[in-house]
Amino acid sequence: MSGKSKYYYEFDRNTSSTTNINPKMRMSKEELGLEKKHETVTGGLFPTGVRQENRDNRVPYYYKGRNGYEARKVCDNFDLPYHLATATTYILRSYHKHDTPVDCLKKAIAHLEFELEKIEDAKANL
Image (cartoon, rainbow, N blue to C red; front, top):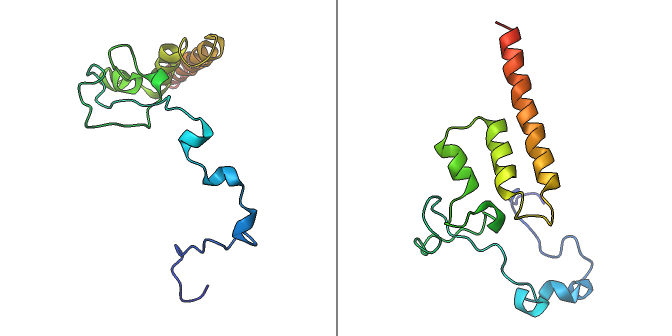
């Protein structure tokens, strides 16, 4: 690979031939029967559909509220520290991501305990 950029990529480098590729790898999402679940609209505190020109599929549906509020933007708006923001996002998504909220609520409790430990350590070091 001398003389080539470190970003150079050969398509057939890791395969013996292109005939060994799984046929499903060549199918589109529609052909595979995958539906769009995570289509969201960015804008945080704007109702869903207000800012249609700025679609952002990076934010899953379970982090968006009924009126289009995003959990991360709510936490940013309140300037929450890391563990409190993480606990808040777990609480906000708890009834939307899984069948039961138990896992998300346990994670939220753990992050609240981490924040309490951080506060207690800060008091002890004064």
